[in-house]
Image (cartoon, rainbow, N blue to C red; front, side, top):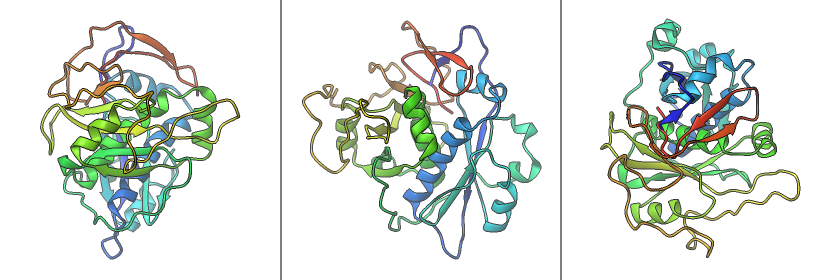
Amino acid sequence: MAWESGGVELSDTVQPILLRVDKENPAAHADAVAAAAVACVLAFARRESDEPWADWVAGRFTKTVRRAGPKPFAKLTADAPSGIVAIGTAEAAAFEPQRYGDMPRALRSLQVSGTQLPAGDPVPARPGSPLIVLNQELEMSTGKAAAQAAHALLAWYLELGPEQAGAFAANPGAAVTEVRAARFRELSSCAGTGPLIVDAGLTEIDPGSATAFVAAAELPVPRGWRARSFSAAGSSCSSSARRSTGRLPESRGLGRKNQLTSSSSRHRARRPIRMMSLTAGNIRVRFSSNWNPG
């Protein structure tokens, strides 16, 4: 996601996200992915200072999803700013952005690749929770899917107004679904969806692969604010939906206003940028129509 911040150099920091993986009682894949995404957002929403976050939000947005057994997870996450997010039997926590070299050794040494949890039966979504839609055709591992879901949920959160952002932080939650490519294309073109994440292809999947977005969801906010919701398995978009292009983009030359390109891409958007004020703190960032999350 090619975030631009008025001359600020791209950050070389990364946000660690930690998944609890119990080999004896593994969580469902979708629950773990959702927990990681929510933890990512809560670490940002509950930050005590803007300083560790400003350049990261304005830069490559990079995340690293690691796994730990129950005992090391409990030890490492005791002071995690996100707290421990539990969805079903899945647990995740997220930290503030930091350089790889500055990570605690115990965290840095944890495994990144190869995290794969069973499909299982995810817990029912809490009413009003945002729905993260993943592209099933990509067959992403749990770790890869968690990172893409975290990109999508944080990008969605950053576009909320102050009341909606506060409502989510006070009553957080998310659900995850995976749909076939045709359905993914259809839903990603619906009105009210969050930014579409497009991966740069450094791991697991091909460059330019569209991976995730957040479907429109109703949030428990004051009367007068409305958001359309729909089911990933249900009917087509309403008449207010944008027209689908009929195919997923194949490169970083993306036409949609809210399409994001993943972290490793160095593409810089050439369209006019717009200013957005984040709701918690004094960070102000400029972002373009194409984003580069990490």
